[in-house]
Image (tube, rainbow, N blue to C red):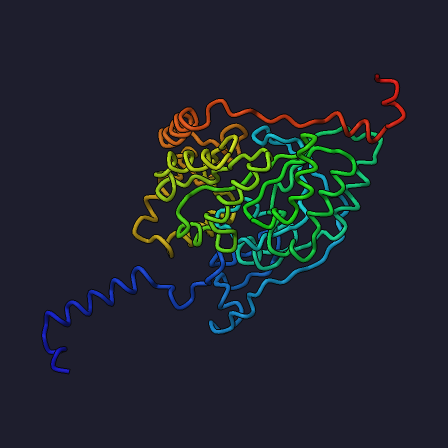
Length: 380
């Protein structure tokens, strides 16, 4: 122990210990494979519980308690009217509530409160399965008042999250869309969509489908922290390439763009997805509403303590001093100098790499002919 008698060595060891405790304070309690590291109280519940998801179960060792559980439900309705003018489609359909991908920034987290759960670890570890989704969709499409409008799968949670491999609800929905020749849009970040390539090709043959793949960075190290259970970036890029090669129209959603984390490689991202066949790329800046403010801030301090406050300040600059905004027309684009720089970069990058890409239009005519075959005889 003579080495400890040296003041310089002691000073170095103390400094190292301080650095370790400052930048890795939660190393022993960090939930690997989860985005949210806390479980905020549901504002609709009177129950107040421990915010630390591990302490909630009594012991830090009991990580098995956070295994994902699945709950079957019977939905009353399945198609949602999209009120926001910021979203390109009028209707959405979500076969699942909650999402195992665990994207820490996900705006859908707060909707888990309405089902009686927390928007934190509950959102990604308690998944509700709408078992009758296909039946409800077919019933709606058979309604005499329904007119063909593109329906988005999914507007809230990923329709190809891991449990879909077992339930095949999304596949059943696509079979209904194909049966009635009804247009459908798909948003996902999971390669499981390739399982349904046979249906996608048939829908695409009649301009009934488009796919949006979420890719907001080329750095898979960052992706592993932001989106711990989603497909890796190389896999998503390969997915984009495969779908484009089949002629299926693919848009890339660069969502969210987070200043200080992934806004430095916009040109590289646009160039790469262009080379792989994307028709367009749409950026959306990060917004943090409800419990997402606490969930994301906690995650940021645990993963990037050296720049956490700087990132928070830049996010606030996007939304007039707040971490989020609910104003239509601004909440997804942001405002201010940083937002303007982000959009200018995308505008220039698209001009360089995505010019002259053919825009996609859904075919909404076939649905009426399938629904009223006798009347179509008189439209010749």
